[in-house]
Amino acid sequence: MRLSYLANGHNHDVDLEKGEGGYRVTVGDSSQVVQVNSSTDGALQLLIDGKMLKAHVAAEGKQRYVWLNGKSYSFEKPSGSARRGAAAEAGGDGILRAPMPGQVRQVLVNEGDQVENGQTLLLLEAMKMEIRIQANLDGKLMKLHVAEGQTVDKDATLLEIEEG
Figure 1: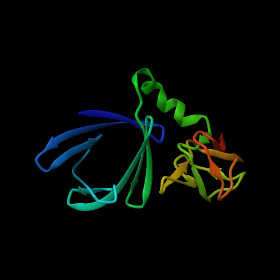
Figure 2: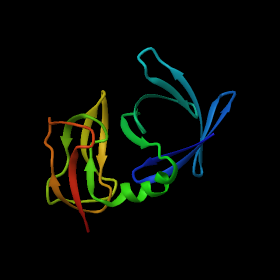
Figure 3: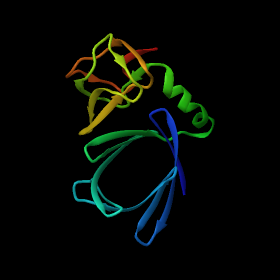
Figure 4: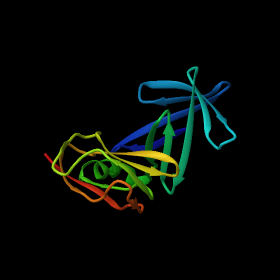
């Protein structure tokens, strides 16, 4: 089965093959064997090439939020023609919005700071998960719209970056 997801402004195709020992998951040139077990607290116990990891997954519409091994990840399941243009849209407008309702736990930058694409700018806590809000381009942080401890709604503007 082939799935497509948008993460950090890039489309990723994921191939899943069910086998006796779980699933073979292939992303690009990398392939892993993953065995999935549910635990009593709603988490998933993942055995990935012999290494046990615990994951929490939450969904909201097309968004998927995954907390794995101390890090959080956000994925969007693009559809049809939106899939082709989604990477360009997500990658370069410099306005970063909250992917889901939550509370700003830590702001790691100040207005005027130079930031790099992929740099973590702030930490948002949502549904007991830490979501790292990362720069979507290289540039200067022009406007910080939130403060630590502030509660934000889904799609609230968090930061504005000017390319350059």
